[in-house]
Length: 205
Image (cartoon, rainbow, N blue to C red):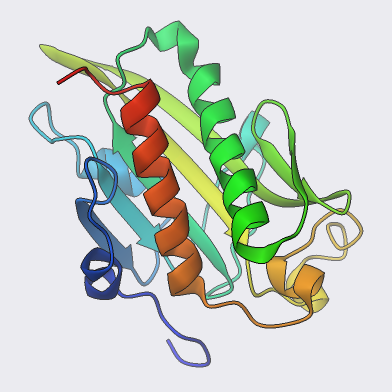
């Protein structure tokens, strides 16, 4: 792809010292959805912490089977494989945790107020900037898994959103009036996710 600074798995890994989230990172040119891509890569022995980014999703999913629009190279679209120590019925806790970390990272990195619309959306100036989709799956002879899909609108202009969404969606670039370094934001987000996940959901070592 051209016209933007493509994400690099090597560059991301080089700046992370992950306990769990981000110890393995894959960046795809295109996929149906990063949640699907995680599932395809998962076996009963796959350790948690795998992160799959995609520059473009052809069938990105939001809540209630809504289509998540993923403009190529404009946002951060990724999913995480986890094996949290919670019951499958507690999946809303994961969605709220991930949304809260996204909101807090946006606020910390850019000094802009980001708020959560429970259970899984993040808003800036009253418009949606990010969303979380959690899918939990039981595994045969293995702990259940959770796939946490996160999408953040980063370098979109208004024209990158469909006419239907322009009044309801925003990006970091629109909110701040400048282009954002997607690598640095992705690194900050993964660091915060890794630290808080280890504190809240991971097994006690």
